[in-house]
View 1 (cartoon, helix red, strand yellow):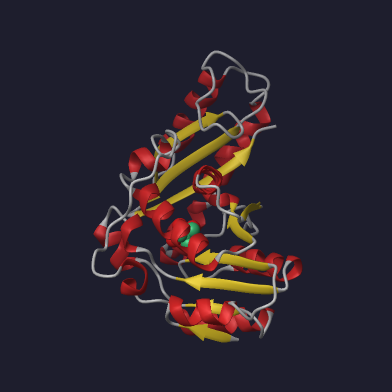
View 2: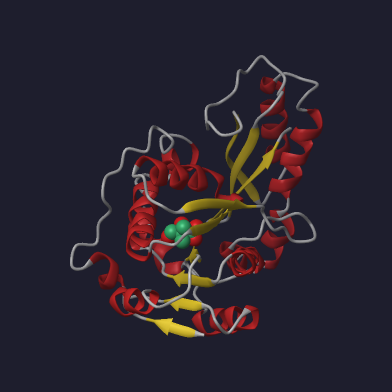
Length: 279
Ligand code: PAF
């Protein structure tokens, strides 16, 4: 395993590395979801690069940034277990941003105006800034992102196409704990009691899916609100069903034919998200 601290040293190294190159950008605190992306990249490419970088510009809440979990030593051990040939990029902030730590401004075609974008102002401009920086600098042939951040995946795919970058963006299925909780680095910040309750997000999505074709979307929303009102430890932030890839909310009076359900909820100060294909 080779660890690079600067993009310059990595770019030099990549000029002799065999292609295709698969990249898995992460913010570290790796879990089985990340590892499944890295494993897939190893299967499909000659060379694999993963980055560990907690991007400051995508955090609208400074406390969230300060408290974001890190576990570099453990992450490196996990990566090495998959393959000793993986390249790992662990930059400091200035290697990416220089002295001006701010996001660029991208036309995200309104995909950033709903759900996570609406709740976390500027978040997706930050994501687009750091991800396009990676794609332009390292020119991976494929880049892998989890469907847990489905809105992020659609936004990255959109920006990659609109900037005509050469990378193929690949979305990979959500990896879940036994009780259905979507794997996330934030899960390790939950207290044992909160952890016990956290699978309610998936439970709610499954309940919605089992009724989606039978009743209008409006009733599904009412049931989800009622479901979370009964939970002491969880506060629903939003629940929404959109077209499969549009992020546009479907019609309230119709049953769900096709679409994706999205949910965000707080357990104490920890905010979790999840989503499920409704078809
Ligand atoms: O999903 C993440 O972990 C981050 O948003 C990403 C894609 C690594 C960009 O910082």
